[in-house]
Amino acid sequence: MPFLGQDWRSPGQNWVKTDDGWKRFLEEHSNFVGDINSYCHVENNKENNKENNKENLIANLNYDIAAKKRKKDFLNNNTKTQYFYQEKWIYVHKGSTKERHGYCTLGEAFNRLDFSTAILDSRRFNYVVRLLELIAKSQLTSLSGIAQKNYMNLLEKVVQKVLEDQQNIRLIKELLQTLYMSLCTLVEGVGKSVLVGNINFWVHRMETILDWQQQLNNIQITRPAGKGMTLTDLPLCLQLNIMQRLTDGRDIVCLGQVSSDLQVLSEDRLLWKKLCQYHFTERQIRKRLIMSDKGHLDWKKMYFKLVRCYPRREQYGDTLQFCRHCHILSWKGTEHPCTANNPESCLVSLSPQDFINLFRF
Image (cartoon, rainbow, N blue to C red; front, side):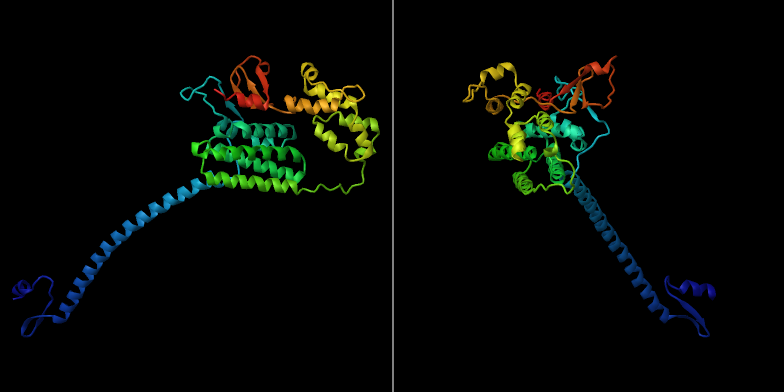
């Protein structure tokens, strides 16, 4: 009987033995139905979880892509520093092409040479400013997008430095004016794709340049609070000797406006004669002779006339140098892996214009 009773039981049903025989337990049947419902609910949850996992996976991928894009945009657009390299030198070969090892453009050289540190060195400051001016005049279109951003970031650092120490104000004003005029000309031809980048970026940069110019114009140079010795306290011979160390005639004119004694010294004929001979050759001077009312050479007028006709002599405390043996460009005093027996004899100092010419293939 127990054996037959077990056969009578259907799979999934519960039976109990009573005095009258085997009887199906109905209360458990409802639990069985609940188990079926619970099972179906679990299976449905599994399917829903699969769909949710798939959606979460896609969302995570999209988030990673967005995060990488934001990081790239931050590095490319919002950075205020240059892209630095461990090496302080670069390999340059004038006859290089893109297919040859050693190909280097002006933009790459501008990115890799440490100009941000150079502007903090008084010996290199004027060199970098002159280089920025030459690039502004004719080389902006040859810079890559990153090089252009580094150019503007470096220019911002130069302006901030001048605002802080109140030195070389006129020099930076001239640089900004040159850059602004060049951009005005280039923006007019933007339809010819002469500039890399969106036109709105360049318009914003031009507005920034105007703002920098206004900040420089608002500088008020105050007399130092200390009561130490000043230039006018020195003997006249020493004052004249200091004037002879100035290489820009405009500085001499401005200095002469400080006091009546300096005004007299600023008109010294010998002072202007030495200045003309320092910047220009004898042949250039002979072509621009100007006589005064007293029958003497007017060296002051000759100087300003010569400046309009010929470039002035450039002299810097520290410059970039080029190794003719291994074709490596670096700052003076920077070691590079040269294989020459006498590396010092292979180094040539480059003027800012020589630096530009090095990348004209």
